Amino acid sequence: MFYRKVYPQSIKTIRQYPALIFFGLFASILGFSEIKTIFNLTDAVPDFIGSMAIYWAEISMLFSYSSFGWSQLPDLFALMGLFIIFSIATILAISSQGALIKASVNGNGKGKKPSFTDYLNNGLEKFWPLLGLNVINTLIGYFFIMLVIEPIIYFLVISDKVFVDLLLAILIFFVLIPLVVVISFVTRYGAAYVVLKNEKLPAAFIQSWELFRVNWLLTVENAFVLTLVTVFYFLILASLTALIFIPFLLFGLLMALGNFFFWLIIVLGVIAATIILILGTALFGAFYNIVWANIWKNLTTPGKSQSKIQRLSHKHLPGLNR
Image (cartoon, rainbow, N blue to C red; front, side, top):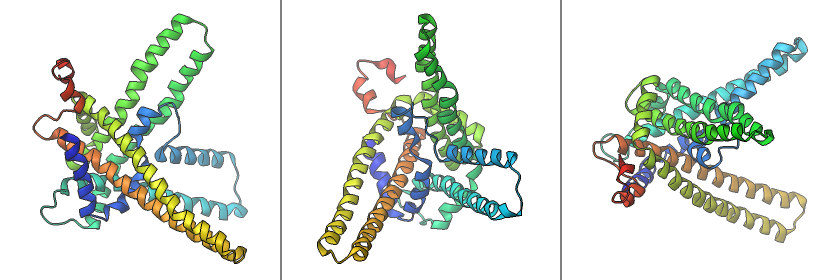
């Protein structure tokens, strides 16, 4: 009953407030870290926040070692323009995450319908604590993997000391990797505490850790379910994108009116397919964030929520539900 309640409710929320798709587009920039954390942990590719931090760190290093004159002034203005654009994108991405979390409490359709600006303002009000949680997730999810876990794995590969290798392997797979996974889920719940309970960042982090500790099995199970939904959804989206583009390609080949008209038709097909891809990604970004907010809402509501595994194993492994 748990998933049959949470997932349809998330879809219903988006149907009632189609403007949430806009927030889903920018929230998707932050990525779907819970899925990546479980299934692609060793791929040390930075998320949006990490990429921006690395990019501007490299730019800062370039400035510190270079001497700029009047001839480089246009380049400096261009960098300032990029900084403004990326800053706006970051603000919109973080605020959109907050707006979608806030939307989860209005999914029942009762009361006054909030406006687009209401949701945006809700996200902007919680920008700094939400940014802090995303930075924590980035520091653990990327920099910790790159600077700590990957060097240890490299050492294991080249080392010939069996006892040391065993200790390091135990450290990685039973301490460090679970730490990265836990932080990803804790920061997700922490964002809900910030937006819906008006908690400060430290208190939100502590309470979300306690929530995860009690409901770790359901949390991980939901990540697996969302992964299946994600794979199925993007397979459909990729198929739909191809179905949109292929008729343009065939029409261009059949018409054969010259290079100009052929490429014009192809460009129109690419534009149509891109629009479908962007809308599809935005829709899923909204759904993904609202699902996690609804999971948090159900876990913090009086009454015990149990995962499917817990219900099936209740009789045989009662200790699992403690």
